[in-house]
Image 1 (tube, one colour):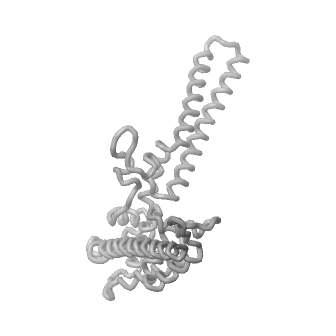
Image 2: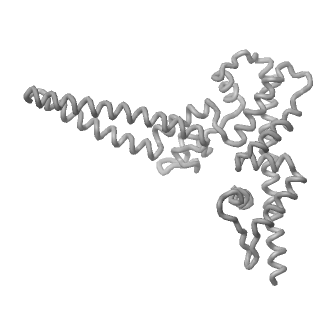
Image 3: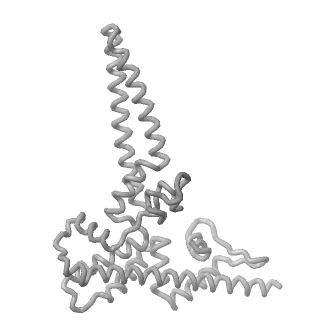
Length: 269
């Protein structure tokens, strides 16, 4: 994440950001002025970063409308083309789709800090169950009844903890594509490349994964000809266009803020 994007995000937080260069400070008003100018000159790039980094739904709606202009006039399935644009916007903003959520859920269940805590608890309860089961043979009826009750209680604890971990993992998998095994770095302490995400830092989704998402959503009537002729290429064009526009906007924002900072420094001198 660039310094300019960081400042943009902080503009919408409770504290007002500043960008220090020597004795010059960029105030929030200056940053908003620069952003307003760039929004007029680069509307798509501006909306792209507002949607991706600030979850701006108005920016999402504007992008959706603008990207729909890319749908060919002779497209056979314009409804699906619009749906593919929505999915491209979701992927661009790193909002996990169904295939990603399944993979992320598994990673959160196995490699998150909460998973490690839950597994420690379940191992402890299982050890207690094993110990108490060995005591069942030579005890009185009353003691046996107590042991059986204690064993059943711990078994239920394990079931409840496993279910709670499943729900926790599913909830986390809907929030971000970042890999919980490596924390988004792409590497782990054990090996150079994270096996959870393949070194990318997150569970990414490409066009073939989007087709899988459509099948999971019950949209199974997509023929190979429609997919290859209309949907796949549209998805890739929209997604690559969003990445390019967002990157350009970020670069322009960085340049303008640096220029403003240098001007402020000149005024102070």
